[in-house]
Every structure is written in C-alpha cells, then in structure tokens.
Image (cartoon, rainbow, N blue to C red; front, side, top):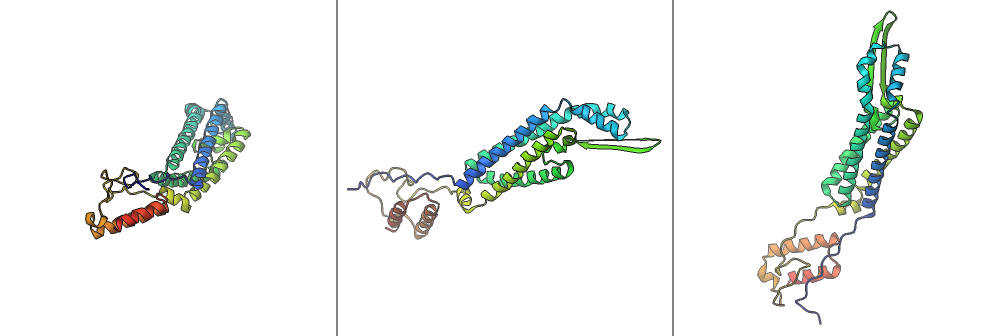
Length: 261
C-alpha cells in the first residue's frame, strides 16, 4: 500500500548535453593553445631586439632611430605574451561558465568568440599569423640625401620561422574550434540546457515537489485551496517542467491529478 504521507520523489538531475560538453572541452583546448603560444613568445624574446635592429639597418632607417625604439622593442614580447595569457584565462572562464549552464556565460561566449575571430582574421592579414602577438607593432622613418626610409614590422615577422608556422597552426585550430563552439551552443539540446528555470512557488500541498508531504497524511483538495487561475498556472508550470525533463511521466500525472482534485 502506498503511504499518502510519504515525500514526493525529487526531480531527476539534469544531464549536461553532449553538445555543451564538447563545447566546454573545445574552449579548454583553445585556452591551452593560447598558453603554448605565450610560452613560445617568451622563448624567442631574447633574440627579438637584435632581429628588429638588423631589419631596421637593412631598411636604411637612420641608426639614431634605434635609440628611441630599443626600450619599447624589449618589452613588446612581454606585452604580447601577457595579452595571450589573459586571452587564455578568459577562454577558461568561458568554459567554466558554459559547463555549469550559465545563460549569461553562453551569451558572453558568443560575443567573445566573434571578437576573437575578428582579431584573428586581422592578425592573419597583417602578420601572416592570427596570433595575438601580431598586435605588437614597431615603425620608424628617417630622411637623408637618398630620400625617405621607412621601417614597419609586426612581432611575428621578427621571430624565427618555427614560431610563425607553429603559431599559425595553433591559432588556425583555435579559429575552427571557436566556430564549432558557437554552433554547438546554438543546438536545440544546448538551448534546453541554458534555458532559465523559473523559481517555483509553493505547491497546493504546502511544500514543493521533493519535500515531505502534508504532516497530517491527508492532502487538502486543490480546488478548495487554489483559485481557477492559480490551478491553471500550476498546470502550466507542471507542463513546462515535464518538457524540460524535471518530472517523470508518473510524477507529472500524479501532480496533475491532485491539482484537478
């Protein structure tokens, strides 16, 4: 015999959709790619000033220009690596927000993905690699009897070929992964996962589903406790919860029967 005073069974825990899990791991992989790029920037920073100075001499720019640029050139790799590390931290934060089902986190992830793709495309066109290090830029000019000499160079152009090729591979993967993340987070299963769940009001039996029932063992009749408008609202809430998978068919039927008296 079923005990009328037994507590209602709690709703089943929602399972994270595979699309959301895949998006989370892709974001983590992108963050790892950014960190690898930052490490490579630091690894090649020792020879960077000498490479820039040699390139300036070949351009014909007056050697006096180097005295103004040497200090800036020395810190440019540190700035580029720092920007790349910050980007990696932001991507990891997005992955954490997506994993826990944050509605705002999904929106911010879409915004960040669009911004990152725009930066990557600009970097690819200007320096041959979509890495964030392409924002580091140095230029100089001088005039002599032979005319005006101009020097302009972005950081990746002064690094060895191994950096440019590896960075291109890492950030190309990052761009493709970001596009995949945007698509995965727009899938129907992801929409259901990120849908905001409204705070449920106290049910007609004095406690929400999942809590002990009426201590007297008898439930008051729903029509006597609720107005028709409240009953209709409660039925609508039950239907939405069933569609989201928070109630089994048996739980839904039992609650609907109680509401209908």
